[in-house]
Amino acid sequence: MEIQAKNNIHIPGGDISFNADQLSVSNEDILKNLGMQLADADDYILTLIEQAKDVCFKHVKANACYAFIDNFSICVDKQEIVLNDKRFGAGKLVTSFLKKSEKIVVFTCTIGDDVEKESKRLMADGNALEGFLYDIIGSELAECVADGLHNHIEKLVAGYGMMVSNRYSPGYCNWSVSDQHKLFSLLNGNTCGITLTESSLMLPVKSVSGILGVGGNMRRLKYKCNICNDKDCILRKK
Image (cartoon, rainbow, N blue to C red; front, side, top):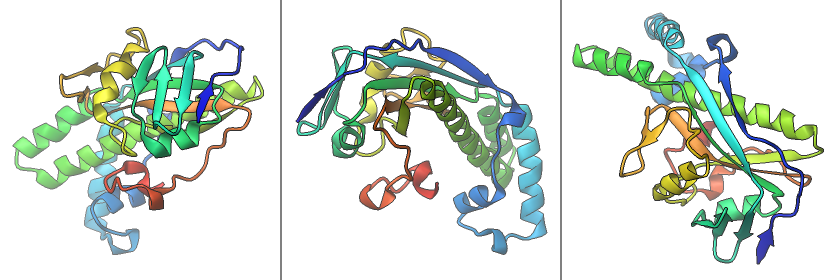
């Protein structure tokens, strides 16, 4: 089954920045990354978390870039998405969830590399716990920026009578991370300063890239983690 793009409305892409006060990271989510629950945390660890959050938020440089792709097709049987003639082996889950799309949005977002540098500095100085906390908070902040972009696009397309899907990234849901280079090429250089290594690692590391679907019949749902085998996905707890 192959689905072709249907919507002729052109929506321009763009970029957006976020201030630190537009972002939030919960202590509960940080503790989950430490294998703890909020009820288990003592005053010492909670104080460390608050101190780490204060510093990390001061180092955030949150930016996101996005483009709407009108020329695309989705083949659920082949588990493939074609965007501007570039083929992506996105897998069964992603193609199934995006099959009703009328447009595809390609995006990147980042918090910059300052939080990562602070994390590495702390670890090198022997402050392993604090460094690990900075690393966790950086990952949560990057996902928070992705949420902010997702919300921005949702409001934008609502003006055209459309809705958004969940977002999906190479490296998750059985979608090979090697597709990152093709994904980035669709943004025509507007990647918020994010670059890729030969092995498709994003630099700065605390960055997120991916796609989402737009259309009149799309829905943004809770992530169906029970049917996905990516145990390390940060969205598994959302």
